[in-house]
Structures are given as C-alpha cells and as structure tokens.
Image (cartoon, rainbow, N blue to C red):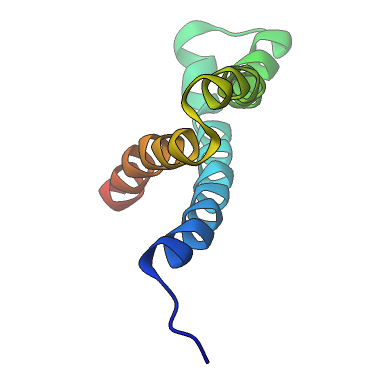
Length: 96
C-alpha cells in the first residue's frame, strides 16, 4: 500500500471538517435567535433572514470562488479557501 501524502490527507480532511463546522455554525445561529429576537424585536421574516444569512453567504462565496479559481488556479485557491474558512471555525468551536 502506498504512503498517503500530507497533501492528500489534508485535501480530504479539510472539506470534511469544513462541512461539519458549517453545520455547527448554522445550528449556533439558530440557537441565538431567541436572544436576538428579545434584543431587537425581530419579525418572523427578519428571524428567517438572520438564520439564512449563513446560507446566503455560502452562495455568494461559491460564486466568488469560481472567479478566484480562474485567476489563481484551482489548487491554490482551494487551499487558501480551506485554510481561511477552517481556522476561524475551529477557534470558535474550541472557544465553546
């Protein structure tokens, strides 16, 4: 059996962690909606907008990432996106 390279392991581990943390972020903001509703008296429509803001950001980010991939190359931009999204989420996860 061939040895797995660090790049190969990171290539498959990072998206798994990012997906896990993406779900964690979604649940975290859903849990905070009661506090936000009490503090800002949000209507049901605004509550939905606040919760779906993570998803909206994901859609915008996906569109923007295509531009970056074309400009800098797929491998380089994927690595940078993985690092920039995983590090803060891991810190936030460890803070709780």
